[in-house]
Structure formats: structure tokens, C-alpha cells
Length: 311
Ligand SMILES: NC(=O)c1ccc[n+]([C@@H]2O[C@H](COP(=O)([O-])OP(=O)(O)OC[C@H]3O[C@@H](n4cnc5c(N)ncnc54)[C@H](O)[C@@H]3O)[C@@H](O)[C@H]2O)c1
Picture (cartoon, helix red, strand yellow):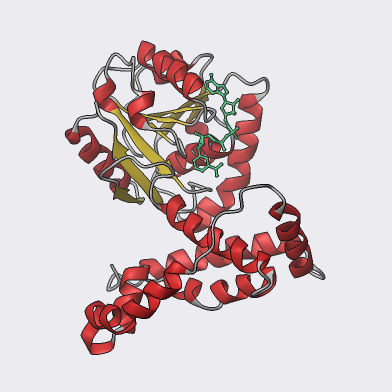
């Protein structure tokens, strides 16, 4: 049984998944969410995630019985050793949630916000102890995807950023440190670069939605799940590694980069992409496809754990 209590504040899609993950690691979890029926919805979501977490492996003493639901955010935070905040993505709401957390929590307890895009520097303004607010940005669903993006705002102490990195690494996550705040953090910006170009390629008739999905999921995407794009590039350079790759292909890639598209300025692209997805899914059961994806993901995570040779 893990010694420690996690406060999970906000138990929607992301909070519920975090709560399930922390329970699976053996923590006691005290959750809070003001929505009517939130406790029931949380318990149902956790029940839904639990078989997958059992397949992944539960830590000693892990139990859904170690979940408690508190009547207020301050109550949830009282006595917590770590707080994971997952409220609505609005600065004013985040600030008021952080103020409520601080009413209950001990003064040197780390508070991590799951925020997808708000700046920690903005969120921490007005906090009593802003030095302990960090970003702990997960990828959906946090109980399955290991990545957590960590950074501190202007007032966060570097010691607390280190503490957050060590905490997430210690519970089986793959945290990365972001050195400077930028909108969208790192992984979503990388996705955005790809999204921008795939919309451009569809809109200009270069390839269909289905063929672009095939291009990634049967091409570079297969490699990216195993090794990041830098190491993939290093492998592509043969004996000369990334230096040879960039010296050899860099000039051509620079030309391609000049020709990349812009993000669509209006929403007229939405229906084109939706029609493309509908065509791609014709004859397929979407629910079954999603279930198969999760099953394959579990296999992939297990396979990756067997290959420590790869960074
Ligand atoms: N959805 C994603 O893919 C994703 C991925 C990573 C991070 N995030 C981030 O996680 C956070 C939560 O997103 P979500 O997708 O779970 O949203 P959600 O709408 O599913 O959940 C938000 C929850 O906050 C609750 N809430 C509302 N007011 C509150 C308050 N004052 N105090 C506490 N809880 C309150 C709501 O009742 C709801 O249950 C956001 O900051 C979002 O940016 C989302």
C-alpha cells in the first residue's frame, strides 16, 4: 500500500482518469467536484477503467475502496500529500479553485494543474504559496498514457519543479520538463504542426483523410511510438547518424518546410474533415475500433517496458 493521500480536484474526464491511476498505484484518493451527481459519476468511471488498470498491474494494496469523496475542495485538500487539479479550463475558475485548495492544504504540498493551455504564471497570481504550483499536464486518458508535461511558472521554485518530476517518475509516469512556458506546452504543439499540414493536404486535394491516416499509422507513426522523431532521424542517417541525415536531407527539408500550409482561418474545413472521417469509417464499427485501439495500446506499453535499451 502506498503511503500517501492524493487530492483530485475536479472529477470530469481527466480527473476521474487521474483518480483511477492514483488508486491503482495504491494511494488513498480524496476527490471533490461541485457538479450534482459527481461522486456517482466518478465511481462509475473508475469502475470502467479498473479492468484495464488490473491488466496493467495494480500496486500492492491498491483498491477502489481507498477513494473518498469530500464535500468541498478545501476538505479534499486537507491532509493531502499532493494535489492534482482538473477543473474547467478557465483562468478565473482555476484561480478560485486554487484559492479553495490553499484553504485546506499544507503549505509545502505540491499542487499540479492538468491545464492544457493556461499559463502557470497567470494561474498562480494571487496564491498564498505560488512557489508550489506546477503544471502536471497529462495526455488523455492519464491512466493509460504515460506522458506528463511538467513546468513551473514565474513564481514556482525550481526545487518544486524537480519534486514534481521525481513524483511523477516515481509513480510510473514519463514526465518531461518544459523549460519555458509556451501556449499548448510541447506535445500539443508538435501535434498541431502535423494537424496544420494534414488539413492543408486534404484541402488542397493532395491526399484523402483516409490515406493521410494510413500514411501516419502505417508509416512514421509506427516508429514514433517506439522511438521519438529525433532518434528516428538519427537512425535514418545510418553510420553518420543525425548529423549526416541533416547535412544530406536538410536542404531539401528546408524547401519542403517553405511550402507547408497554414492553419485554416475559418471553420469551413470542419465539414470536409468530418466527411473524410465518415468515408474512412464506412463498414467499420467505431466502438469496436476504439476498444481494439485500447487493447493494442496495453500490448504496446507492455512491449515497451520490455525494451529498456530504447531511451
Ligand atoms: N480533455 C482532455 O483531453 C484533456 C487532456 C489534458 C488535460 N486536460 C485539462 O484537464 C482539465 C479538465 O478537463 P476535462 O476534459 O476533464 O474537463 P471536464 O469538463 O470533463 O471536467 C471538468 C470538471 O470540473 C468540474 N468543476 C466545475 N467547477 C469546478 C470547481 N469550481 N471546482 C472543482 N471542479 C469543478 C466539473 O464539474 C467537471 O467535472 C482542464 O484543465 C483541461 O485543459 C484535458
